[in-house]
Amino acid sequence: LEQIRGEATLTMRGGELKAKDLAGPIDLDTQGVDITLEKLEKTTGVVRINAVGESLKVTGLRTEARFDVRSVDVEVTLDRAAPLAIYSEGGGSIEITPPPGGYQLDAVTKNGEISVPEGTIEVTTSGDERRATGPIHGGGPTITVRSARGDVTLRER
Image (tube, rainbow, N blue to C red):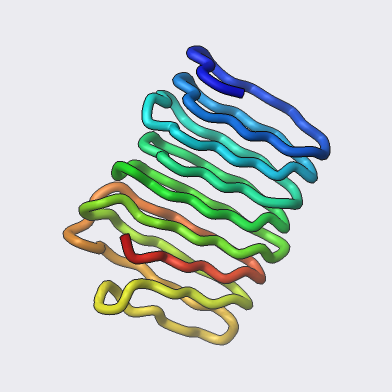
């Protein structure tokens, strides 16, 4: 899918979705789908994705997003600071390339690891739970991550 100017709402079972240059809000409900969303610089409104199984790769994100995933490997690159919430169950890794500038991190994983760029914030451990919370580069919109049985990695920009 390319250059959709209005709202994009899709329900898919199995297969692959590649979309780029979407300008309106995005609402996906998928099961067993490899999802790739690129060039989201023009996207307005909220990006909502509910996915079970396979993978999710989002690049060029500049607007608010919420991902509810189960057994999905997630890779997200934010081009501009905006609220992002990722709720993951059943494993699957989460890799986030944060926006340039500041943001607030609120990440918790149970039975998984959290990796953050050196010198940003401390990762604390309590039993099988890991937590990384606080402002990074002066703070800003919040990146919220909750993961059960999956690793969370924040990459250096």
